Length: 212
Image (cartoon, rainbow, N blue to C red; front, top):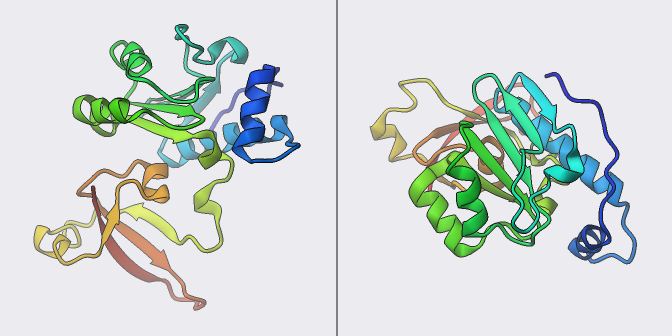
């Protein structure tokens, strides 16, 4: 994927304080945290099929701040199109959600904030936009969960035989808000193929069905 050149963020004191509290630490390398979050977001978009990933020219003005709604911070394009918005607010409110979703034409929109979305925003997003709108906390994107040594490879199964409705009823369940499901944005009803090696050279396939 093509990625925009790296840019150094000049975070406000308020943002730095929120990041420090996020880790409950007296000192934290704010630049490292934000740059790592950007890195994980770009990896996530690449793993979802985006071929071109660009970062907003003016990062500082691209943040969602109070009543100011601007351009997406990160744009992943070429089927699917994914826009990633970063917020300085603690939570994504219904007002912020509507402001962006009602005018945005991307296939999927990701909101990143310190404490996710409010209960009302989550409910409205699910009712009106389904999995087209997603919410992440900054802390959830500091590390790429799919790179953890104990997390096996997950992929959406497209084999008609494995996805047969009768078999789906027998598969164990995996919740849609599982961190890996969120990373790939798997939908409820999808059959997920999980490939484990269990220390052997021969992979073993396991299947799960995504549920609420």
